[in-house]
Length: 427
Image (tube, rainbow, N blue to C red; front, side, top):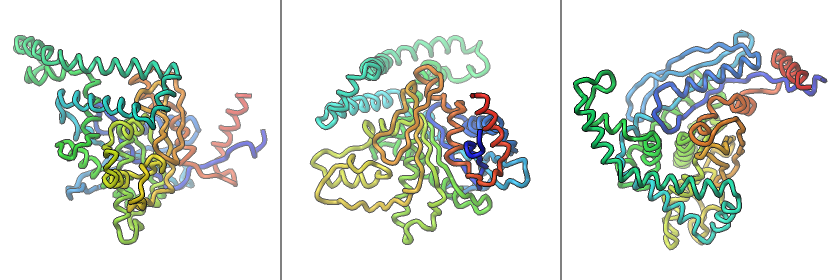
């Protein structure tokens, strides 16, 4: 084993991860806990001794309210190594919790399924449908799992009022004997117990991806994006941390929030007199999406104009144009120049997906995306969707892409010795 075959690298600069969680009953700091613990495991496996500490910073919300952000910082135990890695989270679950009712969830789901059917029935998308039907594995998912989801939701819509009424009656009669978390309104508790987690997960997606600007949920979506962009800019502009690079990372629906945040940042930069130079856009180096439904949202849930509405269609495309493939946009003789001059072409976008994750997929709607197929052992469904958080290969790949600098002088001898030892064991 020669020295030139060993990839000698050392951790570099001052990096920040801006992580956005996905759907579900999330709690504050769970995202930080997941990612920080697994980064520590990765560093230990690489024989990189690190210090982890909890830090706080004063932040200001979009409305001017001052709050305290907690984040985790990694530094080296070796005083000669001057680098740091901060992990920030954007917590938004409290803004969508209990915001939408059962009938509205089902209505949104029906609209989405109708949009899916209409999408594949259009003449230009017939080849996509034929490709799906020719692939037996994908065909089974497409025909049966989608069908069963539809049947489940429609049946649940029918039996939900009956189940809730019966459960309320039982809880009301037993109320003198209840204790702990059951000691609350029988009607409220009946909703919690009778509603399956799947419906709550769909509720988050339905609230955030509403396409009706007249809907009250449009304000929730706008608030989520406004606060996400405000926190991102605060981190990028943090003079004390003075980051060399900021990497946005979003899981599941969080990847949509991350994408929409960068898209909104492109619009804002286009409106500034100096085209975004004062926004420190060059510090945003990466976008990591995992378990992402971005393609599905773009195909089936995004607001679309009718064929004859070519002006409205162009406006909608321009306002959602970050990294969208040019061939996806409708062609017309007018409005060929987009007023949104994106300044984030340098951002490295990596998308991680798994074949057992029903929400994620290879992103084809967008350009300049490095799609990485993960292969951790898992079952189809929620387990496959959550597996990224604990997969060592996931953190290793992110570290290789964003955290290391080439070391011509063999600065990181411990890492070099570790790699040489591992390669020797494999031989």
